[in-house]
Length: 319
Image (tube, rainbow, N blue to C red; front, top):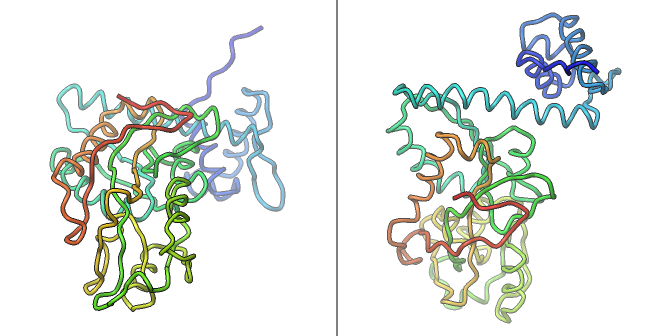
């Protein structure tokens, strides 16, 4: 039996382009190659791997199960080649120069990333960023890491993934839920409840159900920014994490729910290889710096909290 032929980086880039663009012709245009060159390269890779990677038809090119796995691993290999180059140059005294791909849900992106990236860019001016906003539903941002489209995912914890993903991660911020309502209300807890589809872990939902004063939501929306606008217009009250309350409009009041209030824990996930890269480790350090200042009073602004540890799986916490 002969030695298996390795795939080249150029072949991996072609697989990535075909899967992203959905056709050989579009991939050729993207890469500046001819369609025949793309077709030939895919056939060579399929021969090397001994599997059909794309279904060809009038719909274009659709990845088979084998193709999807090949593309996922190929993206990981290409990313590690970039990390290898960036980390080697930085270790030899050069500038850390790479693009960090971050997947985050909206409130985390809006409240945690700007100041963290500002500090990181001050130290590493050659870094650039690609931030994808992904709804926190089902596998959410973590799916971007699993698929090779992101280096790091900011997630709500606990976050459970299908077995075999092999991701590592840790805690970034722990914060309480607070009550928000329009100013000037004599009895704000009598107002209708507004909620949004991404809200709440299983534990938080149990707390919601246990509160006799908190009726089922009258209005449910798809985005927390819409929720904040509706509260600002006097349509009701909402129970939200503190970082979301920080985006509130003037005239919206924040009330502490006391020591028994539910909490939201925000963390990150990455592959073991990328979690060890210089850029990701530096970003995690800056994101964690967001919780080092003293948490302010909820009636004033937003804040972080203590690290409660991790209770989730099947992944391990990065040290």
